[in-house]
Length: 359
Image 1: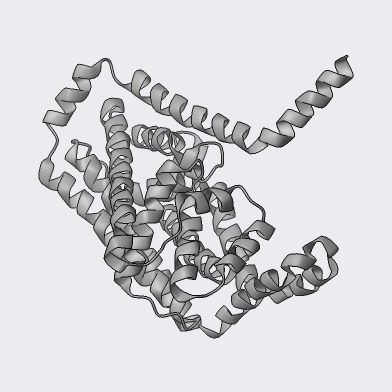
Image 2: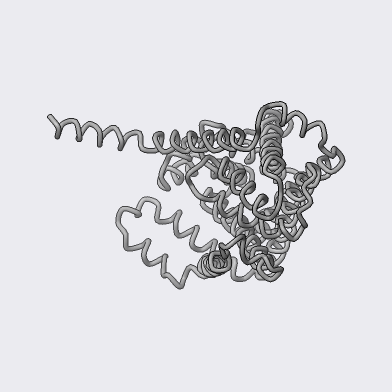
């Protein structure tokens, strides 16, 4: 009887594993946001009083930086796409980025937006999903390297400890891992992945797709100037995020220096990457409050800052949803549907390859 129960339990877990983990991540995000609000605010009146005193011009300036972020992200993406002889306008890339932000908010993973962007560009440029995704990996990773560089800059500015806790070793490790991974992505031949793929039998059906990804990564070695430009865009984008956080904090009367946020933002962004919450929601907000308070901000103002930044991301996602709804009528061309994204999100690499063949 017990053996039969264990078998059924194991079978149920195997069939619903992804749904279980998704549900747990949703619970974690909701719990963390609820905890933040209940632990940092005395009552709802406190929140209303803080909203009434906000510096609106500074808040609008912070919001405008998000527009800059969309534009510079499109510029970076366009630079990398051109290395593969893919010509797409900045306007189209900006719309794709906005829609990606929307799917990051509505799908139970932070990569939902990236899946949309990969499919969208594959459809637009008539290329394989594998090649489109490879370009996006380089695009994303340049942002990771930029965050690591800012974390090191924060160390040089003297932000090595908070209280008795030293952050030197974690930041140095993060920087080293970023550099090593970047080197391996641009030099996949070192790991001889092409030979590994050729020898593994169960990869035979998608061997051509994987080899295409391999050769796409390998081709980026010829475009050092383009990669450097992309890194500069990432550096500017990261500075934009830092200013966004700084201006929102100042609009709420927090007097932490800009240098403080050069330390805070990369660390918070790294913590938000942990795959235990939906898109980092809850983790990002609580981590931000922790570091801001540790550096001298008031608890309630720090919490309000994190919530305002959270709302800004939600608004950006809503704008992306509107763009997703109207773009097919403006461009008069099909685009990946929510169903396409769900299928790709819950499928294996083989399913991705089959979807690419259909397109």
